[in-house]
Length: 289
Image 1 (cartoon, rainbow, N blue to C red):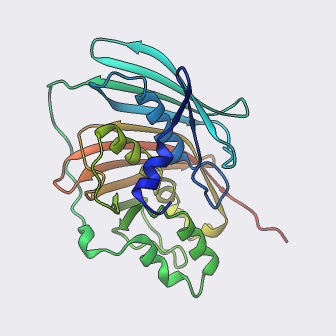
Image 2 (cartoon, rainbow, N blue to C red):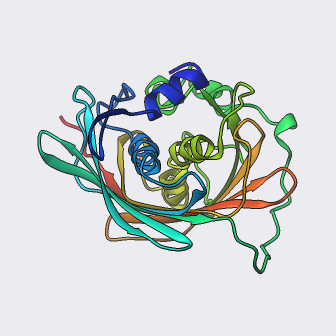
């Protein structure tokens, strides 16, 4: 997936019945449906049944089964409620009649009210940072397997510029905090629903990696199995996906083979545009032999 156009095509579903939509898959090297794809596509399906004056303000998703990237995903939308200010939808994603993902999403009309936010962290700007795949170049010669694992997951339609240098081949005791700048690689003109779908897709990157940071001295990153379990997201303010957005991440806890991570997303003016939380599975896979 090399362009934003291809990403939009991935997230845009085909209607195949009343409240039923079908999507194709990003061909991930790890051969499982990418969680960010399920989030973005399910949000797209929900949007198809929502009045035009209402916009997503929150979503909550559960990843039930590993998806097969060789099969289309069918999304069924349940119309839960249409109120005076809020609209609620439930989306169930299936393959072979098995539920693989469930999303609940809420939409709201524009309304005035109180307004406050936390302050954006003071970090290096994206203009002085290298993209993540260039930062990983130092691993290519001495750690080719690790370099391949870190780069094959890279979505070429989006650019990520980490503030902190991430070097799992030379781990230090690291606190579970990361800051990553994100934006679409091309200038695009999109409506707010599609901007939100792309940001939902992008929000699934870097979360579980943050939860691993304190454990890199005792764990081999190249043998870790990471998988999203659930994911929640709140949209606070409008944004542009082709402008730089700072993803400020922290992981308050890891226990019982699960890592928990939070993220706040700011634009370059310091406005908090979205917040994310996720819990995921983190297991060490024993090497054979």
